[in-house]
Length: 198
Image (tube, rainbow, N blue to C red):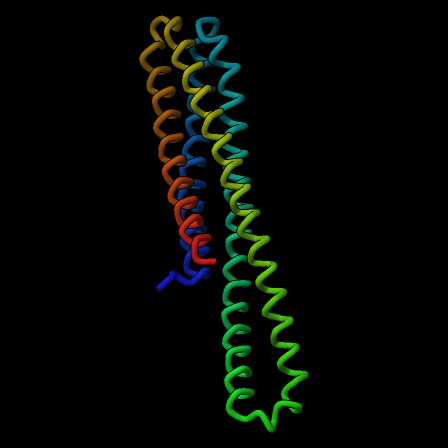
């Protein structure tokens, strides 16, 4: 039996919430990197420029995660409403099959029920496509994070006494990007499983 879409949407929202928490950690890494770059002075000029990109990336991931959470919540609400509308339509069909002599009195309510079900189904499909696009956008952020981490490692190599500290920051960026990627991947897998059952 397929997992109900509202459960899937809630699970996706949970994964994105975790990604958002990781991104907040990335924002903290950016602040630490900026403080270190100020202390190190001219030895970390290149790294100082990178800290701006780290901070911007963290803000983008947080904003996007919040947006996706909103999409997931709406998706979950539409899914519950669709489930209810489908149940109502099924009951109307059962009644019309069992009591065909009452069919005329049910026509208006049946049509309305079918129209609501169709509209909710359309909204749900649209929401799923939106969610898929947003998850793909999240992948772009992760690729950017990996580029920033690579640049950070290159800059750390020429930072003298501050090299180890900068390498730790670069590794934190890589580790955080990997964690966010894992959450996005789980969210995408949940979405993929859901779409097989639509």
